[in-house]
Length: 164
Image (cartoon, rainbow, N blue to C red; front, top):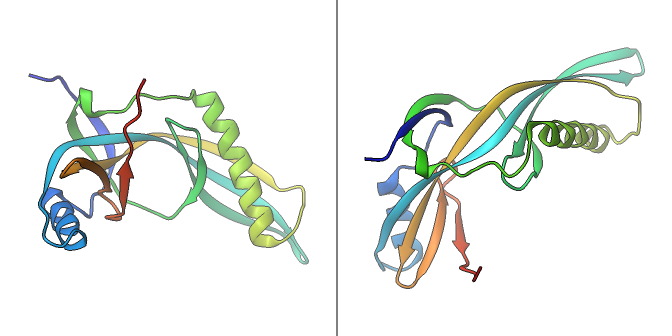
């Protein structure tokens, strides 16, 4: 029996049944089969920022997530998490370190502030790491193809097999 670990998982909106229904509606009744469920790691940060305005500095809080495998950073909306026991072999391994994730989060927050406020300014950013959080994905086989379905949004991503 596979060893289980307790992880903080972003609350799912799409279960296995809903994932299969989504595939069946898109593929015109062709049945899909859930092969497995994976959990994908993200470094989670809270950035407390002070931005210059005409009347002084304004404090802003921004949530930032950094993809723990590929290192892509993005700001995030609020979400709920729950502690869930999952098989250890369903957890994807980290591809970047916490230090790398922190640098990526800092750049992401600075870029988003500059873009949103349409200015280049000396933003004060205090970054706080709030740990790892995981997002679940369903891997579904449809005929000879595989599709990954996001358990939070229901978005579908085709998987492409490549030789190693």
